[in-house]
Image (cartoon, rainbow, N blue to C red; front, side, top):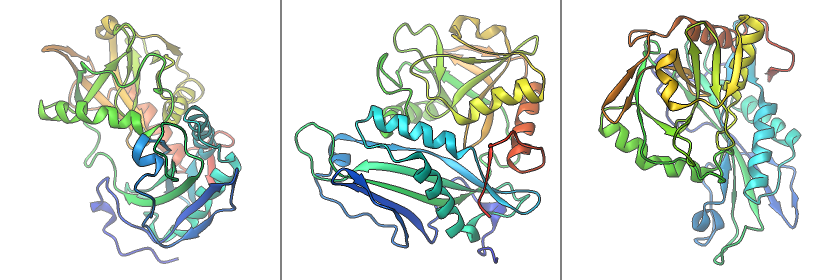
Length: 341
């Protein structure tokens, strides 16, 4: 199979249109079988529910070329489960999980010529999403929905290696105490746009959001979960009902315990204990782990002992092990790797 003539090493993290996308429609109480189409454009009413009341959810995962030349995806069953949970919370019909996984297989296979070669640092990003498409003017859920999944080749999130970033403690909340923080709804990310623009204008890379109820506990950033390493090597991640359950974070916690023999703990992490940690990272699909070197609390700097030059040693081991599993260099736990072709 010939690959597209793309400078893979020059790719950024942006959208490039590929040949096929998967589409399935929910109407009259049921999903159709779904199909691959070529047209990237969507036509809908000006009064479509998604445009009026933001009834939309999404997922994000990647397809990789492994060291031995296979094209695979990483734990799409967990994305399917989370997508179903998001749909239930947003009063949307649940796409059967097996259809979700099959849609990923089909769309990656159909765009296999856009899957970057092994060793380039690039991958094929897959974006499944669903939205209410029929006209709705009164505040109520849509009755008709469209599910789609498209792909786009993306470069490594960090060119030249992952350098530690500086983040700020946000004065905004990313989710309400009993809101939608634990699902992947578009509205959550809309809520964070002003905050991230403000952070960038002030010279910071990201925001740290505290719990919306007491603002004493660490939650997450606009698009990633936190991972902390204690000074004695324990891996700690915040626990909260308003945190999105990251597939990457769950995988890293397993890797820490089962592959690296580290102690792990999911618990409430209080803001006033941050200075006690040795390392900090943001984990998610795009970058796997983004190391954090400094946290700015309204002018007061909390400097992690791991510093601003490179990933901390434990974070680096976690990163190398998980990416090794994804790329086929390290044997994966059963069921983690979904082979496409």
